[in-house]
Image (tube, rainbow, N blue to C red; front, side, top):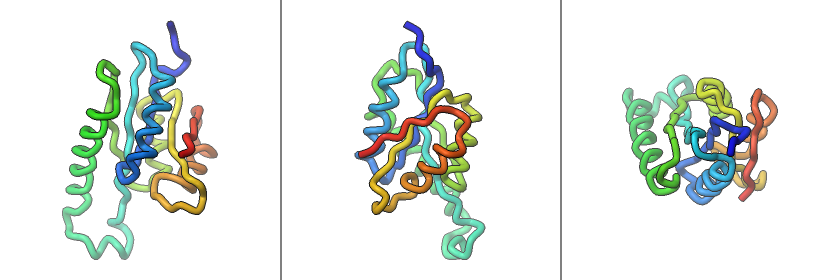
Length: 144
């Protein structure tokens, strides 16, 4: 059976595993045999701000490597075996990185989590709203 979405990008926040699991579950509802699931996370860019001066010079490289390991571990436990899957890590502004990565992997669908607006989380809330507004592809927002 053919599926409309061939490249599904699931945006996960490794600091919020319950919501990230829900995102993967929702994304898997759209993935069929032969489709590709791109599991995406973002490491925020602190280097250009005053905040960046408080971190060691190699902080971002180490943060990206730590995110890579954590993303692969997450995928190993959350993505069903046999799924064609690719890990994708962005570095910078959250919603801009999501949109750029979606274009890079030719995503047909972006799946992103969102909380109630009063909860603060770097991959959710305002960033999810911006992705919905600016993405050139379909976006599925998963509410927890």
